[in-house]
Amino acid sequence: MASERRLRIKTLVMVLAMVVCANAGDLMLKRGMSQIGAVQLTASGLAQAFRLTVTNGTIWVGIFFLTGFMLSYMTVLSWADYSYVMPAGAFGYALLTLLAVVFLHESVSPRRWVGVVLICVGVLLVGQTKPRTTAVASEAAA
Amino acid sequence: MRVILALTVLILGSTGGEIAVTHGMKATGEPARLRPLALLQFLGRAVRNGWFWAGVPLMALSFYALLILLSWEPISLVIPASALSYVVGTLGAKYILGEQVSPARWVGVVLVCAGVALVAAG
Image (cartoon, rainbow over all chains, first blue to last red; front, side, top):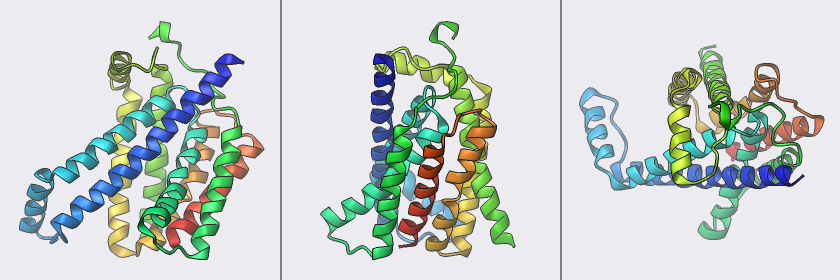
């Protein structure tokens, strides 16, 4: 029982890390790309966009967070089900809406609120199921 | 027609890629502890797994399909449509990875899929 509880807690921690990193990364990329401005779809336009993105600090902060997302995703998938982690990660969409309302005072349509509620109920349902239903290679074998 | 094709590539690419990575990670085994050194060793083992490298190009392909779709259709159509990958991914988890998807998990996945579609549609 204790190990089951431990499994749940470390899965929860990693899913939270995933959600925070993915949202922070997307936000930073969006901010960085708006500093750069609209990209022209020509050879010289793309070359210039490439130069501006690799020298933009905000973009690199975004890449740092998205790398953190990928690493936490890989780590949690080493012990938890894909069909558990993937829907649980959708909690980020609900979180983003709540953050937009609380901090940016954005108005949210009723349709979007319904979506937030559906995501929260769905994530709670998935969260109640067993995080792991398949065998995992043992550490000793590796 | 081309939109449906690109959407298919988007969904199958992302779920296929993630299923391959999951398979690779399960073969890698979980890290002994969640400490920096143990995690680095764990990631070192993970990237030496072939399934990981099978997953990466599939995810890249899916990302290109997303970019192409976004150049044709508004984001409020593309992201809700791509929410179908929650259902496709769960089917893959069940039939390819052999995970047990209980009725409660299925209901949760379908709610999440509908919820993401509604949130992204605005």
